[in-house]
Image (tube, rainbow, N blue to C red; front, side):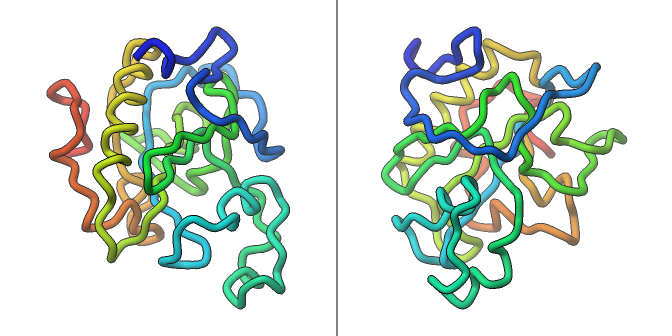
Length: 185
């Protein structure tokens, strides 16, 4: 899967590239050591629309859906989005800090955006993820593990407990092909 490996600039050639303005430089000491798995759907529990891309590119129209009025002003992004059919989209270079984790902490270290890569799966807490998403996620994880000194792969709920629930109870952690010791538990 060499086509899924990040280039020296942190871009995955196999991913569709859609640039988000919601990123900045990693701080000194912000070497990537954590991968955070998220789930998102816009509108909630609806798949395939432009809502996620519009949110990450600051183009979400508040009038397009009642829920969008609540989130239209957010400045958020992720490094990657994996759509329901396994399509991989990249918004931010892995060398940069995407704004995906918010207030967060892992292993006693706060500000997880500083040292993590955020991977969004198109999904929700109450709908199982598709096999194609797990296949793309496993390929991406394998490449990222070769590129970075990753010490853990966690859910958003693990770094922001009580504030976030994603990727949710229907995300099957057992379907991830990871070396022992990298999963959150």
